[in-house]
Image (tube, rainbow, N blue to C red; front, side, top):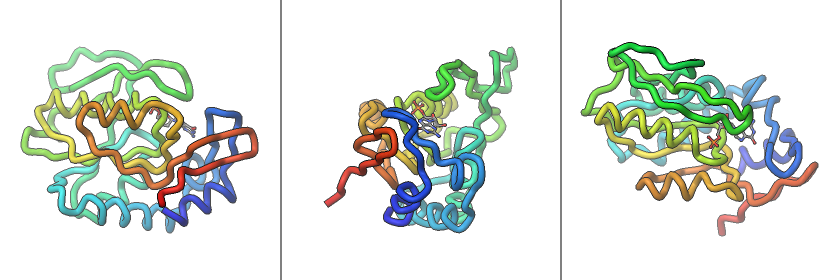
Amino acid sequence: MKILEEKILSEGRALGEDILKVDSFINHQVDPVLMQQIGEEFAAHFKDKGVTKVATIESSGIPPALMTAISLNVPLIILKKQPSKVLNDNLYQTAVTSFTKGTTYELTLSRQFVSEEDHVLIIDDFLANGEAGTGAIRLFRKAHATVAGIGILIEKSFQPGREKLMEQGIEVYSLARIAKLEKGHIEFISED
Ligand code: 5GP
C-alpha cells in the first residue's frame, strides 16, 4: 500500500536491524485518515471471505481493526493481554511471548463473543515472529471458530512470522513488507 510505505519512509525510525518505531501515526499518536484507508483496503481484500467478526490484540491493532470492522459491517473483538492465567470457565486463554518486551502474557477471549459459526479476520499492527498471530489463531480454534485470514499493517519479512502463519494454512495479507532495516534505513520488498 503506497501511502503506508510513504508514511513509513517519512516518519518511521529504524532503531537498529530489528525494530521499527512508528509512534507518530500507529503506536502512540494515530493517523485516523490513514487508519480509515487501511480499513477500506483490508475490507476490499477480504470482502468475499465470509468474515463474521474482526479481531485484534490490544492495543495498537485497535484503530485499524475497528476501521476494517466498520467497512465490513461486523463486530470487533479485542483480545486482552492478561498478566496471568485466570481460572474461569468462561474464558479461553493461551500464553504468548511479546516480541518487543520479551515478556509472556495470557491472550484472553471471552466465550460469550465467539461461536463455532464465526469466521474471524485477525488484524495486527506488526508481524515479526508470528507469536501474537499464532496465539490469536490458537484461541479461535479452541472456540471451534475458523480464521478467514490475517491482515498486517507492517510485516518485517526478514523475520519468520509470515512462514509460521502460512504453515498453519492461514492467508497473510500485509500492506507494507520490509525486506531490511538498518539504523536510519528502511527497505521494502518490491511487489512487481
Ligand atoms: P510477533 O508476535 O509477530 O513476534 O510480534 C508482533 C507484535 O510485536 C506486534 O503486535 C507488535 O505489537 C510488536 N512488534 C513487533 N515488531 C515490532 C516493531 O518493529 N515495532 C513495533 N512498534 N512493534 C513491533
